[in-house]
Length: 367
Image 1: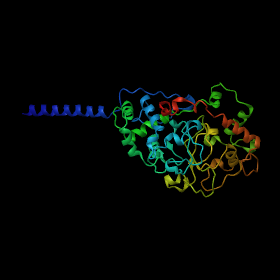
Image 2 (image 1 turned 60 degrees about the vertical axis):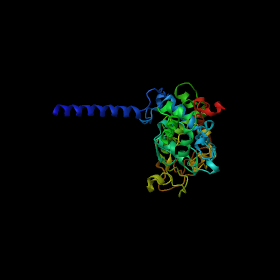
Image 3 (image 1 turned 135 degrees about the vertical axis):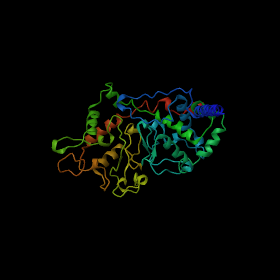
Image 4 (image 1 turned 90 degrees about the vertical axis):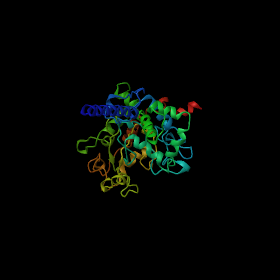
């Protein structure tokens, strides 16, 4: 009897193990997807962000591109992610505030999507941790895409195309809100801008003009008036070859900010008026500037940092006490220095990035 009982236990244990293996196989990522190879320069570094449960695949990236430009994800079928993030404008839209469904305006300026592979906190206030979370928020916002995500899932499930694409990317034809966000995130991770004249200069393939070199030096240097070192201190926030740092700063727009920025997320008064530092790659294409689009040109931006910094308790330390002239009360850049800095900023324009068919609307080629 004891032998039979022991045998039964072994059989039950074996069957349980088989069941667990089958469940794991059903829930795992698809076996037959083709890995997507991300290509970027070594000087960008490898501190990239790709979650283990959403590996890059060619099928996932293609599905994400289809969904990024899919207007059926909005309640009135007029808005897609690509409406506010247009490739020709380095994935911004050229507006002070973007127009969502029913012409409702967003509360902040559209941000560039270049080089999000290295970003961990998304939106101006850093509310989203990870691209998957970021992708889902606009789809669920009433003033952006009409909070239509759940209904869009049902509509896409009824199409002949999308269940097939989801099966190719995720192993089954089931469409869910999470899978939509995961696919869009995969596509957004491919939006790498790394072939501007500045990149070619770093690779020894481009010789900058005198103005560009002077502007680059001013951009990278911090002013030390006592040593007669002139600089604009831009690299303190926009350093590294990516021209971006994972930081939040109060850049002196208002003494008493109407939009308190990062403070709305953390609840900390020390974060009042702080916003995410954005990449300056393709900056010549992404006007207007700042979280509220208040500056229409790079000249206005330079004027702000040069002579219109508003003091406040949370003002970034890198914007305090940095005159180029002994006894100066402001940055004190000359007109030529400001012009040279703008020449350097224009070096950051990557024309390949804004014309690359890998990032373009696939629905246009199907019409």
